[in-house]
Image 1 (cartoon, helix red, strand yellow):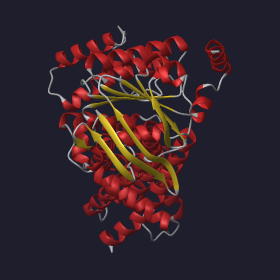
Image 2 (spheres, chains in turn brown, blue):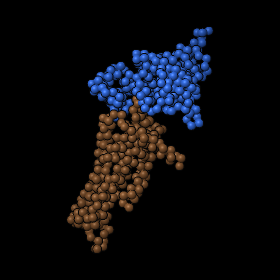
Image 3 (spheres, chains in turn yellow, green):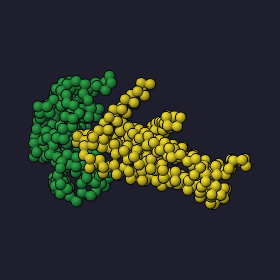
Length: 247
Length: 255
């Protein structure tokens, strides 16, 4: 318990250092766009591949589970859309990003810590936490919700692709299902979740990297802790946000 | 000038620095020597504010550094250059970008002015045509030189060097030592060097403080070291066979 409070205290103090006015805005924006490329754009391929396959699998599973003739086949499209938008494209993608982006951030900052590069910045009078972490949090929190939207589109395309290949239901039934009882609020809900998850991933990974110690083993261990902590917090946040926004 | 008064530092229950009082003068290379784990690096990091102290005072000229808030510390740090044990060059930046880094943050110089200053600093440490190289493309000695170039980029008043010779061959070590000494004298910098390399001590040690188990047990010039009566210092200085031989020869000559 004391340990958990200690971690929480250090996390809050670090975030206080992070959320200050950047020393120079031109340097912040340069870092911001570098991080948009590194954390968001470079994640597009893996997110696209996973989304297309999951979309296809959801369609097959839903279609093969609808045996009753009283349930219209268009429900395949409806179920695929709802599964993707409500849970898969935000929570599942966030868990994947916690592994990919989280380990990248914590090992990068952790290596800088153990090779005294962060100390070197501090000695120069630079707020290292602000310089290194704020652009990452901003880039991911602002742009990852659009990654979620992209994942949603590609997931639906994956579903359409498997229908085209297998003919498990007709394309018009699938498209009807996609249009059926559509609530744009769900998109907003999912994008909000993704923004919160992105904040969790980047801030937690940065925290563990920033306080890494004990050489390369320490960097590895901080990476693992970052991924585990981010994943657990994503699941908790998912529950809380869902309760707040959907109940 | 930097003045340390009765500085104490604890890690939990363990006291790692005990009542350290030292004065470092501008234009001189002040060396802090001692065995590994004696508290040298903790002292250096405490002096620059990377580690908080438990009691005592640290003065930078007329400013009580140890009582300053974060903002004021930041202002003092703009006058500090530091060379780290592993050079601590930024992996993500080229040599030129590394040296330009503090300029980007704290000056309004034009691109050309910055480049001119970068080239001047590189020339000062005897490096040319390395602007576009990255740290992993440089040898250990070159990395140290770039580290020094970055440390002097904004004309610091205070220069801190943590084990500047670690991992370097004896010839390169001497070159780095000479470079530090020249820069110190040239710009009248208050320079503090942490080392356990006796060659450095004999090369550049204008003022030498010996730290043993967190305590300053001896202080003097490089010429006083060989004739010191301090048992701890003698044990440290004459630890290897070559040094023991020198001591025997000195004693024989004295008889």
